[in-house]
Image 1 (cartoon, helix red, strand yellow):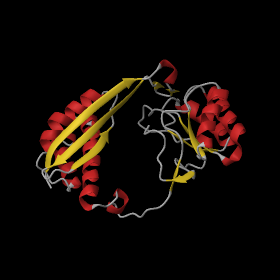
Image 2 (cartoon, helix red, strand yellow):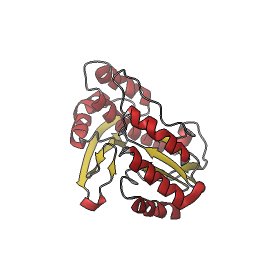
Image 3 (tube, helix red, strand yellow):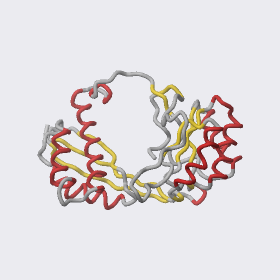
Image 4 (cartoon, one colour):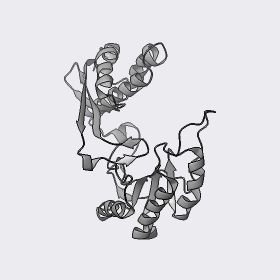
Length: 259
């Protein structure tokens, strides 16, 4: 089962002005993705997705040229060998760094899809796991900066759908963020697990100031509180349960978006 073809398809479309979500890294104004198709010499097709890196056309072009040339003819079942080849010729040499890693992720995902199709096994079984329910939270590029009442209404629809955990976007100002988190806590009580994601919008001082307030509202953990400092150290998130994905709706459904 050899890799016969690799093709990446970049997509990008704008969001309506009222559909943009404001979060720590700015306002979401479009949706991007890069779908990756890998075909074997015996006709099997696997699909993966590479992160767009905010430049889906550039990522797709790298996959369709350099990375494609590196992996054509390799054993499609040898995911480790494919990784090693790209690492040697790109990541560990003078090639593209982040771009190659992003592109390789889409190829790797497609190869695992091929493995599953070739064996008739689901991915969890290929990885040595077993079928079981997993917790999920509602989040993704949603629940962003807005008036507390509007945020509560957005969260209400998700709670009504069965979720018992949500991830709120913070990183605006500490005061406004704490007001929003408190409003959601008040609206839904202690039965709702609240996570937060600042998308590096905080300074170290902001993260430290926000910690007591987030703890007071029983936030279950905060992701990406601030950017790296000049010393290269990453500040710790607010002290809390520290669980990025706490108990939530018992289902195999993933969160509402990748981000």
